[in-house]
Length: 206
Image (cartoon, rainbow, N blue to C red; front, side):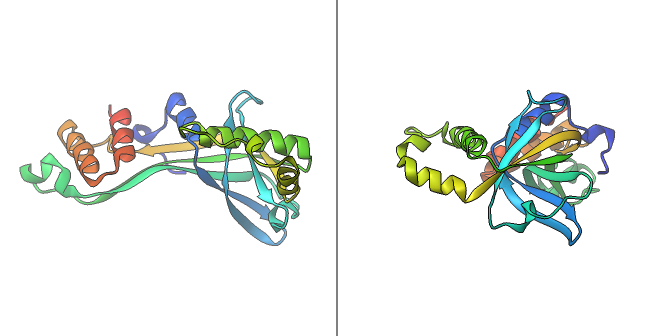
C-alpha cells in the first residue's frame, strides 16, 4: 500500500481502526485463484505478537475448504467520504483546489486458521454478538434463543482466525491541508450528516 508519511496511522489509530465493529473483506489465494468474502471480525489484540482477527464463514462457503497459498489478507475499511473543494477556505483565496476522497483503511496480513469446533465457534460468536449488542438498550444474547436452535446455527458455520503477521494502514483524512481547510472539511461533513467521517478528520488533524 502506498502510504505517504503524513497519512501513516499511529499505533493508537490502528488499534481503533481494527477494533471498530464493522465487516471486512477476507481475501485468500487458492489453486483456483483469489476468493473474497465480507466478514464481521472481532479484533483480539492480546493473542500473538500482533493480535488476531476472529470471525466465521458459512459451512457451504468454499473459501474455507480451498487450501490457502501464502498469507491471507483482510481489508479493513474505516470511514470514507467525498471531499468537495467548496469546503476549503483556500478556494476563496486562490482557487487552486480539487476534489478528493478521505478514507481510513488497513491491509491486515496473516496466517488463516480454520476452527471447526462448536465450542470455539460458540465462544467467538458470543463475543462478536456482545460487541455489536453493547450499544442496544436491551442487548440480545445467545441465551435468549433456544439452546437446540443455537446449536443448529453453529453447526452451519466454521470459525476463522487470522493470526496477524503484518499490517499496512493509511489514514487519508485531510492532514495535508491547511488548518482552515480542515475546519471547513469537518464542518462540511457534519452538515452532510456524516458525523463519523467528521470525527475521524478531527482526531487525525496535526
